[in-house]
Length: 499
Image (cartoon, rainbow, N blue to C red; front, side, top):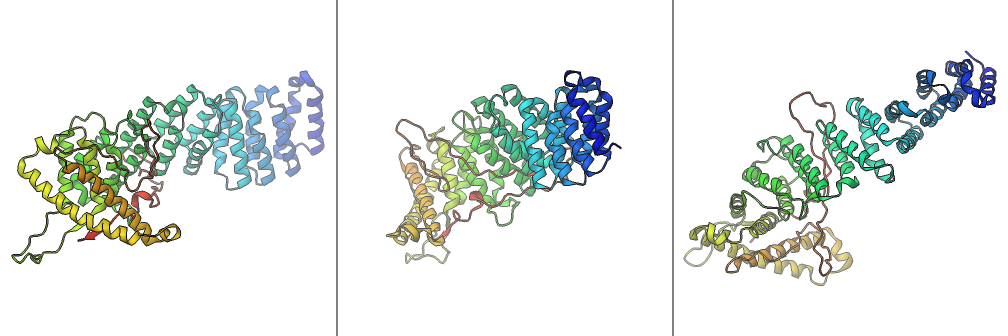
């Protein structure tokens, strides 16, 4: 093993050789052997090996292995020095291997080391993005769970910081291709991160790019499979995937496939859904997602069928008035509870799809069914007016801090819900029914619309889909990600009003 003095002497030989440095292979070998010495020798080797690496291609493997030994040394200062110098080994065909090594080093628990690894990866990314991606995706597909997790997070946080000249169209195409391989077997949290990665790529900002992303989500959601309402994983996967799809929909990227699946498979099973998250109103969750998607349907092959299913489900939440006794008083039956949150979602979805088939109520329903519907609408509208008056009275004169109390926040949201339902019911009372009114769903932010501009599609909180479970061995050991409850699972919009 060389001493410190021998390392300095051989360093001098190489430094003085200038253009003939490659002829001093023995001197470089002495420096490589420095990794077998003590702490001082290793520190010098960590600096000297990368400095002359490019001059000895025949010793490339030995040099990289020597530096890798230093990256795994017990002494943290030696590890940090070795990691810092790794990008100097990223030349030509060695770069993917260096990227692979750096990706494995992401598993470190030392924060300073972790930052050095991140910086080194970014450095070689700017040298050769495709080669670096090769190393990263190799570990994502085949590496240990902790390495896979951190490599995905690296991509989700660092890609957006890279300049356009690094993230070329070819590089983005490679990211999409490799991501599709990973998406064949992901956990929920991983899926959300990959959607974040892909939706941030410039080449996927176009209509066709967004359509590709919707198709990816649809595949992950298993829309070809029969929905199983009693399987919490199946329910969770559909809801979480749909959350990822909702922000992608627009007037040119349609939600038709998702809406049809919800109408055909989910609505008939609404009352028997198994909630995947404790405390989540799963029925309201489903109805909110359906309402958000209903605005972006394209041509729908099963439009009338979907409207019938929506109509039938709406009737369940719009009760007939209780029978009155001969003296005009209630005949002892309890007043029905009016579930405004559910009705807002269903009525909005029906209203949106009804625009595409405006004669549904008058031409597609028989007279008795239409009469029954109008009786229910009238009864619901009466209860609605009472509640709106009560809410306005309760909020009258309250401003600023007074409106920020939990109780008043609930009343403000309740007023939005009831006002929305009121507007939509008025439309349906027109002869013939009208579908012209526009409302902003109660849980969505109100956006100012400039004259001549259409309302922008509003973003939604993204949750994480559960792990997909097609046939074959999967990453079962990985924990399934359950999202924190957010606006989708908020109780603020869920009101029962006893008339």
